[in-house]
Every structure is written in structure tokens, then in C-alpha cells.
Length: 300
Ligand SMILES: C[S@@+](CC[C@H](N)C(=O)[O-])C[C@H]1O[C@@H](n2cnc3c(N)ncnc32)[C@H](O)[C@@H]1O
Image (cartoon, rainbow, N blue to C red; front, side, top):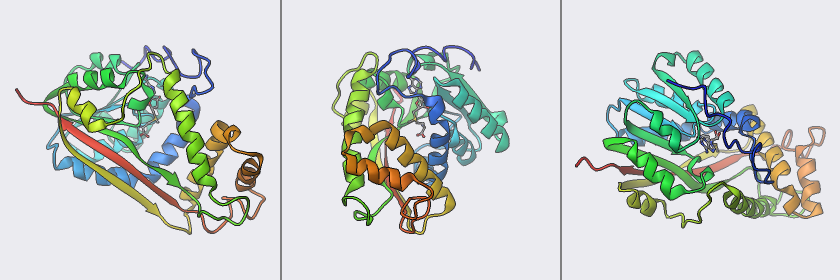
């Protein structure tokens, strides 16, 4: 399958010049750490999907990033071919290397290009099309969902992971700075997200009623469920590394939106030599929730 073209068209961070542009290649390690940490969530979501999707021949991961979840699909559905689709070729390289490491490379393809148009290059209709936190990076989400739906085999399932809850890492009062830091960061991140969406090429404002949007794409909404990740303190090294990476990214992307005291607190939280930092404090945890919506293409 083709994976050597389109990859630089419209790449965020290189062609538009908005402060909300994302360098997905640079985000690769964080996406990978996050998806690895959230693996129990994906495994439970896949077991839940397997009740509806029986023996899929082709699974498409639209906006796969580094392919952690694509590889989990290959493991959960051993009879399926899986295709990781993304516009960032270096992330697809990571995906292919992972597929080799996990022994699923013989059933694993990648396809590089801009969603949703690149899906036209798929050779077969999908029995399961999974889009996890990728749809909201496309300007016209309604049109993209219609294009996703058009790539489904009759009776095929579209599974959309969008929304849930902002992931929390720390108690409300952490003994330094003003209590409630993460809630304030969440609020700034919401503002950033709105600007990010508005800055996308062809951006269309849309009410985020995902079941209604799936229905308007000609599908039958079947189920919605949220999956919880609950990793209590004391955090493992892996969980702590993720918290460090996620807070560093927040420090970069949204810290200008909070006041000087909160910025100073963030700096302390990220300073490895500070006993109050997330590198060393004992109360760090990871609590998150992801919501998945499924919808089926009618057979007639
Ligand atoms: C937030 S990441 C999600 C990755 C993965 N699905 C997950 O849930 O961890 C969004 C992914 O969508 C990809 N992406 C963003 N805009 C895209 C576009 N217009 N066409 C194709 N892929 C795109 C990015 O390269 C990135 O890998």
C-alpha cells in the first residue's frame, strides 16, 4: 500500500503559521507514551467493540499517529488486516517499526496522506474504521464523517473516540501555589482548542453531538461508552514519565494563558531538582476517561 506521498501537504506547523499549529512529528514520543499508558483503556474498548464487530477483514485506524493502537487492533483481531492512516510519515515509520517488533507486520499497512481524502486510496472497504482524537483536527468534521462512512463495507462499524474527561495528575491542593491549578489549565486548554479548531483549513463550527453527526452521515448510531484509566498514586515510572511529558507540553502550549503564580508553580512541578516536582512528589496519579461512539453502515 502506498505510503510515500501526500505527507507534507497541509502539515500543521509548517504551512499555516498559526500559534495553534501542531508539529505532530515532535508530538510523536508523547503520543506514544500516552497510548502505551492508556493501553488498558484501549483493550477494554476493543473487547467492547468485538461484541459488535465480529471477524473484521479490514480495520482502518484513521489518524493513527505512531500506531500503538493500530498494533493493539492487530493483536485483538488476529484475523484482520490493519491499516494505519496519517498525514505525518515519520509517525507511520514508528508504526511500522512497532508492527515489526510486535510480530504483526504481515497484516499491517500504512497509508500517508490528508484525511479524509486519502481514504480513497484504500483498496477495500473497511469493516471497522477507528478514528481516535483525529476527527477534531479536520476542518469540516461533518464532511469528514460522511467520507469515513463512505469507506465502510455494508454492515461495517465506525468507532469514534472523541471527548471524555480532561486527564488529572494531581490533587486540588498540592501544597505549592494556588489550589486548583489543573482546573485552570483545563480552562486555558479549552480556549486553545477552540482557536486550534477555528484556525484549521476549511474550519466549520459544529455542535459536538457525535451520535447526531454519525446519524447525519447515514449511519445507525449503536452505542456510546466511556472507559476509565485509574492509575492511583504512587505512580509507576512510566506513569510519572507521561505526567512529566504532558505537563511540559501544557507549559509550552498554554502557560501564557495563566497568571505568573501558576506559571511559577508549573516551573517548580517540572524542575527535577525540586522535591515538590512531579518527578519526585509522592501524590502524582493518572485519572482519565475516553468516550467511544459506534455507528453501523446499513446493509441495504
Ligand atoms: C491527537 S493525535 C491522535 C493519535 C492516535 N489516534 C491517538 O488517539 O493516540 C492526532 C493524529 O492525527 C493526525 N492528523 C492530524 N491532522 C490530520 C490530517 N489532516 N490528515 C491525516 N492525519 C491527520 C496527526 O498526525 C496525529 O497523528
